[in-house]
Structures are given as C-alpha cells and as structure tokens.
Amino acid sequence: MVTINSEGNFGDVTITAQGEGTDAPSSSVVLKVTEGLVRELFDYSDYCSWGKASNQNSTLTWNNTGDVTMTTYLANEAERKYRGDLVCQNTAWLHAGNYPYFAIRMTHPNDTEGWSNTMIKFDASNGKIESDASVTYSGELGSGNNKYVCNYLCSDNSRVFVYNLSTQAWGKNGLLMPLTEKVKYTTFQFKIADIVAAETATVPVTYNVYWIQSFQSLTDVKAYITSEGLSITKADKEE
Image (tube, rainbow, N blue to C red; front, side, top):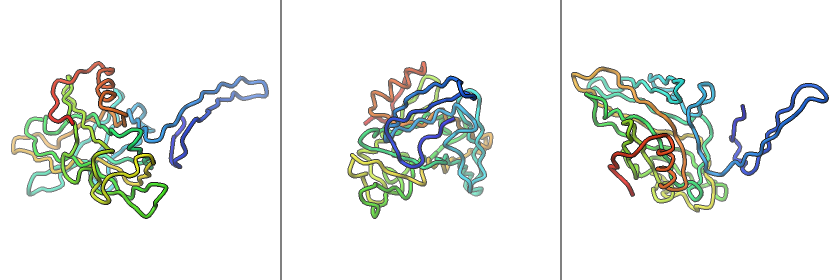
C-alpha cells in the first residue's frame, strides 16, 4: 500500500516490488502523480482519507460495497437538528487550474422521508500557495450554504454535488490565485448540518458517500457518473 502525497511532491513516481532473496524477481510500475488530482473511492476501510469530525458524536461506517455510511447526531435538541461532517484526514492539495471541479457523490438527507433543510458547506482553512505564504484561503467556498454549482440527481437516487474552484471564492481572500499554482490545505471538509427531523421522522438520519473526486471538466464528471452504470435524471443546478 502506497500513500500519496503529504509533502506536495508531484510528477512521475516509480514503485518497485522486490521479492526476498538475492535472485528474487522484481517488478516496477510508473505512476504519474498530478497536482490537484483527488480520488477517494472508499475501496479500503483502513485507508479512507476522509472520516468523521473528531469533535462530533456522529459515526462513520465503511461498507464493503465501496461506500461509507454517516450516522448523524443530535446537535440541537430544541430545534431537532442533526449533523454529521465529513473531514479530509490528510493534507489536501488542490489545483484550480488543473482540476477545477470538486465533486462528492452521496445520498441527500432531504431525500429521506421526514427530513429537511440540510445545509451543505464546502469548507477549508489555512490554504496556502507556495509563492505567497502570507495569503491564506479559508472559510466556505461560495460563502454560504448549498453553494455548489451543480446538483445532479442520479438514477439510483444518489446525488452529485459539484463545486468550481476556479470561479467560486473562499470566504477569506476570495478566488484561488494564480490558477497555475497548487494550494495546500490542512483542514478540508464538507459540513452537513442543520438537518431537521419532523416529529414522525426515524432518527437519526444517515447518508451514504460513494466518492469524493476532482475533475478537469463537467464533461468528465458526467462521464464518470455514466461509467458507474448510472444516468442523470435531474439537474437542479448546472453552471
């Protein structure tokens, strides 16, 4: 198992497997590690790069079907509001020029009977470019709730929420500039909050996450959805 990449080194990487013994065979493969490429498919339970927030009472369970289930917790008893944030547990490297589209495929709590008002925030802190460490990009992308540029409803009733790093501004210091540089983030998360339970709702609500990825274009996003054997049945937003 090879973990890539906490130090921000990109380019061609050669990985060699060497058998034991003097004359044991070896085999090598060359991988191209691209600036801004993010691929979390939840294939392995021990190597998920995204998890629950450590300060919350939610739970995250890996399913051997290649997805995870977030069980939310009661964050505001008086208003019957539940929450379960999804947090990147590694250093995140983004590149708004190479891979401007950042997307998550998940089930939406609002699509569960008795639940409403879900607020999704794409949030980060301490984002820095190499050429000017004095500038920090942080806060919510789009400066608010549900600021994704696309919301695709798929044929299995999951949804794909897409953000555009090249056109949407962070709450602090705005657009990632220049687009030619990678940005390092130490805190990177989706805040899934303020999910309101009706009196008749079965509590707590859960949602599944199938992947979190970056893409070069919306065409690539749609092509990936199609490659999973799904179709887009509705687009509530599309830039």
